[in-house]
Length: 442
Image (cartoon, rainbow, N blue to C red; front, side, top):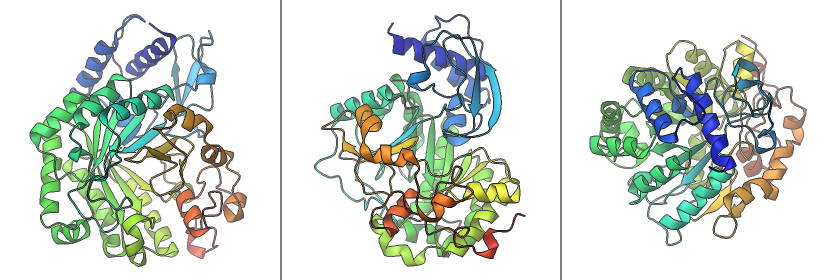
């Protein structure tokens, strides 16, 4: 067994111990651990995938390469969510060979598996419809996954387009799981029936992110561009429940559904979702066409305060996405959150397009590299774009903000509104604009 395999196995043992599993001996096999994970979930215990992707709390995390393999029996401080920095939430005994570090983190990559999609969503950042001729082949995808694993990533999101329209998706999920990654999905849910949900779970999928934008079927169908989409999505949710495949709901905020967001959070809790992720519109792809239907800066601020207050009263995790100011809002109004960093682009997160182009996030057009020409792990470590983002040397109001470390501003919006300047200020911030509503700490 190689050194990397031993590190991964040791960390898996550690993770399982955190979950209360009985793991005897350092030689415990990977297959046994995977069985234990599945069994833990079937018994109703919060499992690794929940803490990593859905719940995001007190996550057992990967040790950075520079901190590995030092013979030192220590305590590993566990931080909330996918962040480099944050407050210590708990600590646990760690097997020898692991360091006590303050920079441990969970790394997430999202692969847009295909441009093909069965819906016609008004806001689609990828302008998805038909598959493109240059999409990665199965073998190229496996090579990319190898690089993702070498780079020390923990979670791999299979998104699209609609990932379930890719014929080899089950094989690639199994391949990613076999490399020690935690496969999860971003899907519209319409293609998930019970056999599909069971097959996904058997392949190693840990969770499904399913899009639902309205409590009103007609409004959801209009936004998603296909009549009957709402009913098919609800059927997909039910299939996941029957198969025992965890899921969370994703909602894109628009002016027309702004007053339904908290109702959708209640719905998420009602149907058994683990979380409700609320996406704030970034105008790219077809989203450019609906930018006028997005919220104003003040409306963004008011909704963030509503959803963070709502998060205290529901048994699901609520996370605003593409609105990193939620970290400031949570602190201002005294709402505890498991997420300690706003924008993760290039820090602990990136995306790979269907044709292999790596970008800091789905809403940024700037290329960090091409996995057909350069190994993913090399791109992640050495791309000038990623190195620039990791300086966090923000300009304007983001550079002088009291909440710079927690929030960081949305780098996609900064680039969009400032001619591609990735470190510019995020103009979509009520606090930076000194609006009175953003200064209130209650």
